[in-house]
Amino acid sequence: MIKLGLIGCGAIGTILAKAIEERLQEKFVLKVIFDISFEKARALKERLHSSPIIAPDFSAFLVQSLDIAIEAASQEAVKEYGEKILSREKDLMIMSIGALLEDNLFERLKTIAQKKHRRIYLPSGAVVGIDGIKAAALAGLDEVVLTTRKPPAGLKGAPYIEEREIDLENITKAQMIYKGPAEEAVKYFPANVNVAAVLSLAGIGKKKTKVKIIADPNIHTNQHEIKVKGKFGQMICLTKNLPCPDSPRTSYLAALSAIKTLENISAEVVIGT
Image (cartoon, rainbow, N blue to C red; front, side):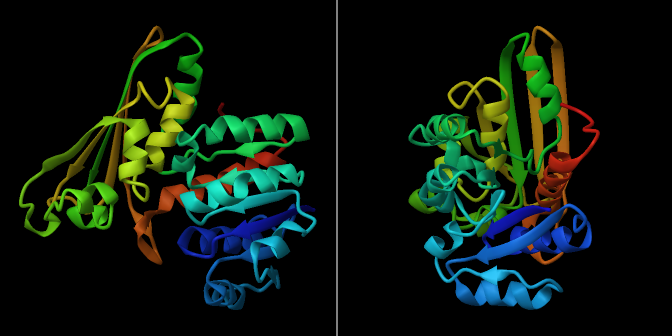
């Protein structure tokens, strides 16, 4: 059995925990869960048929004998815990991928992983087309543009919105809120554009990947359009995400991609790149 630990007991963490015990139970066991809110961790445990340990703090989580630690909490959790997890010879799955574009964190994590012979797993998240982009990048990419379109309420609380005092409630038609490199987008919209981060890592990097964010009061789904040009030709991918059943702010596909990543880890046959 592959022993798992879960950091973050919110919407995605809950979906993952339930999938581990209901769909993946033949090959995986959820041994320990941790959240900075003990109440969230306890609420999750009460929803499970299995009985994972609730770590009272990260130190207690870290000393557990685990094969893979899954981060489903926040960019701050990746920054604070990622290097420590790999240094303790545990593999790491990261959901808050936006953290990897800051302060050379991705390079630092890769260095530790290589030294400790560990692996880092980055699910595709809330978009399609990442497998094709990885393959196309081998021949060279000229342009990658991500256009994210969300209902105005879906951008509430983003630092970019608050710093510029953008009145989301009075937006009556589609309006471009931001245009710039992925490197900046993940800082300005940390809860909204993990998509930009995984796209950057799969393609031409955080400086060359272009991001547009549009607030559109006429839609009810989070939409991500990716346009790619390169020596392979051209690619256009459009994803219209429905929210998680228990969390309207979280795209269901993001959670499903994490479940599929776990399945691939233990699968005899892996389809796609």
